[in-house]
Length: 397
Image (tube, rainbow, N blue to C red):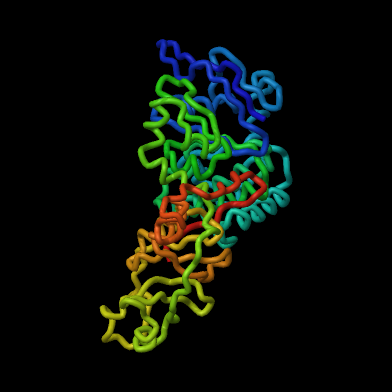
């Protein structure tokens, strides 16, 4: 457990970066620090590994003041991941990952073996081991940074906006991979971000900082969305927090409609025969959705190819949240959200109206048996714990 006990950081010019913060990051949980620029979240993070020393108060790890531990020794026991990965440009990927084991006196063979194991764990191709950071994409560099932080199996990880420098698609992939890793490794993690959506997705607890380094609220993501502590928190979380709260409502109660499909590579005539309202869902030979085909637009081509597909819609997990399902329905060119199982295979489709009816607690017609709206009848999704696994990603088909 990491504990902040009345921690303040005041600089010589009088600037207060962190102001009397009391907070706990529980063992085995992800605690996300979020807030506007200059609110003290990164300063707070860096006080845990003594890269910044507090002016007053104490930072404790499992009840022990970090000030009582040699700074270098302390840092070797804490994983640290920063924006842009911070890799050594003159070292190969495998040697970057093995940095801390080398410092701890591991043999070269043992350190490199550990690095190769971690490359596989974070989803990096072993063929990249002998490349240099400049030869990697941004997403690959961030994965190397995470692997390096995990190399000595530290119980604590500090992550300072680690995914903010990559594009949105890669960022979502990295977030999902991070949650999968946490489900396996059960680390105590402090994670800094300026993105409230990222905080809600990743955090077991979310700590909202206000300008001036004061802590405004610490709560679960669901509590934060439903019961912001004050006007500042409500404004920071955003006006669409009701939509974000759908992340905590399960999709299992939805009645899924069967969806006619055609297989990628089939003739347009076959696709047209399966089409409904001019559209047909194209799947691969494993029944994994690939995109929608407008048979009216492509009536003159011989067979269905990837470039003919409309990929604008997202795909939602049948065991995921109503937010994912509603987004899939609203983004689909047909108005029907595509749902898949945990293997990515098609389960069926759901129109947006049916999702909204479930949110309202009424049957798809919009009213209950007595003609009145029944009100919400949904049970919340059990909050994610580090042991419960990562949510299924909702990616473009």
